[in-house]
Length: 538
Image (tube, rainbow, N blue to C red; front, side):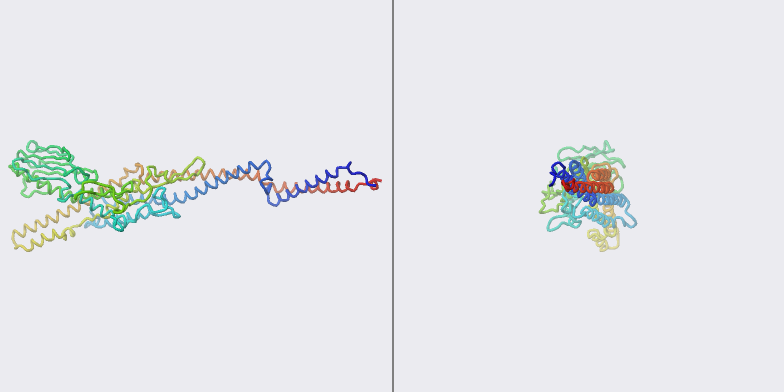
């Protein structure tokens, strides 16, 4: 007879043993993997904490990826900006007013050196990092600037800077070489010379002032009217040394002046006019000297101003070139047609270049590092080097070889060997001297304008190379600071995650041993109870 087992907890024992077996299985998995659970459900009350920490770690990983990419680009930009600054410094010291070099070597080599600098600047502006162009703002899939050859010489029937310069120079100099000023003949009995602008347009000289120290023999009227007109009137014979100064504004906005001085010399030198008792003769002499001086300045300083004005027209901040229109000579500046003129810049023209390219490096930190080739510092480099690259400065030998001047020498040699030949040869040397002086005036005009454009006085201006470099340094600091924060925070989170998701191998092993002992005891007790019967009991 079997004793009823309901009075013994056999079923409960089996249940406990089953739970202990599952517990043992779980702990063996933990011992092998080091993890508390193999599924999210097994995390229990630690699940919310685990998910939260992992989400934050994923976000940090994303920020770290951004930082790695930004650091690569900022490293390239830092090197590029350092080189731009070096080129700016080289350009500033490469040419100075009056420094023509031994045998005019500086005049002869300046165009080639400037072309090399321009090509280097354009090449750096068009470099890419892993297929991404960095000097066009948020337009990153194509080079922001045309190649040097296309910029200067055009392409596919479209005009480049050389052709736009030729148009601008023709518009500024005028058909008679007087810089778009009108200088009519002296009216008999007036003793007056009139000088006037030939219209209301942006080209050539603009009259600004006139003054004299020759009163009462010389009277002047200030520029007035639209277009402006001034006059110089002779009522008596001035004394030697008395002069008239005419101030004018050049096409690039700079100021210049012509000084004409009364002299008794039979052949007045540069800027001199011969004294005469007759006011009309005096006025005619003054007019001849003024015409000569205007033409001299037009071929020198005005050409330099026109060259830089054309660079500003072509390399426009908005990327849309301007060109002379109307005439000839031209009467206005208009936006160029892209089918006719090369558009030098193909990038973005944001008012805030730095914000045009930005990346989040932290929840509350954004690194801004966009750059546009149209920013003032970079634009001045392109403009000045292009202007200097296309301008040549004839040395004395070149001037002598000029067909018109060479013809004077040939005419002199064809004359008898007498005073007429001597006079003709003197005319030849005077023409050579004038042509050579024009070349040096042009060189000085170009040098002074580059010096002004490359001056360190522009360093604090928005868009200067120095300001861009500082802005990039701020972005670099923001990126590195965020990276350091992420590293520290990531270590803390990983430690927290370890505590939440992993187990101690030693503790688990000890727990397994303890559980095995309990399980073995449970097996024995349950087995003994399950075998109880009346016969066993008796």
